[in-house]
Length: 327
Image (tube, rainbow, N blue to C red; front, top):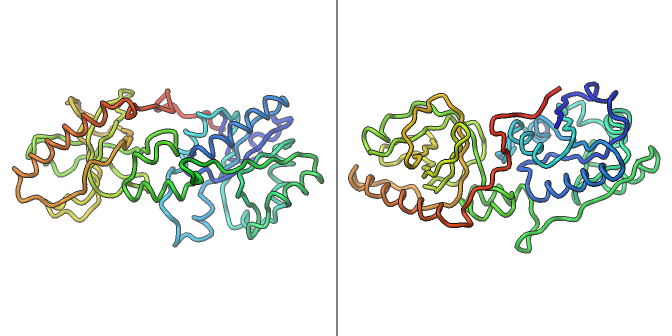
């Protein structure tokens, strides 16, 4: 997948395109179906399949003081988008000037003149342009004027509820990470650099931990989780604690992952943590012996959870660390 950050980077090489457009936070099952349909239609008509999305997320610009934590930041979102087959990702900088464009101005500038759009696929609730004035009917009228067709995908439902970024965000924040997998098609994941912590895990407790420098915005409810961890291309079992470590009186949120049967030096490395299932709440213990006994039990429960067939990890990025081509 080619990633272009301006329309000028690609407009001269696209003779015709099938476009889908959106914020794609989480790149969940609904987004995946939308992208798959765009790719299918593009192939049938010998067009270029293009995903148009934005950086920063429009809410960051329009209401910066009231934005939720996002499921996927730009780097991870683009990496995930690349796994579902589009030939081009147009990653547009969202600005107040763009927000002021009418639906027709946006469509004419970016889709018609820029991408030579012949077909457009949108989600059931997608709007664009100033005041979100551009809906399915508006786009159909513009399609008739500028010579492209428009199709709208019905909502994707799982367990009788619509798959949405809001639903996923609420589940993650409630700690229901197991329930998120069907909606994402993968376990919820975060990525971060391993940094030096308080040096308590191995020396004091006998359970060394990888302390992550927090980069992502959305984290599960504080507590202990069974995890898979990707370390330098290897996938390892683990147990992670998210929280403030109340036994030690911390006041800064941390993510500490104990990787089972692993003893390598990974300081400075980026690792990816996949949250499989919540084991328990974070709690304050009455001393080190009680804490160590509970951690040992957490490790055993983590092994049991990860041994279940339905807990197997399905990686959506076989070339870990290899990003898409950027123009």
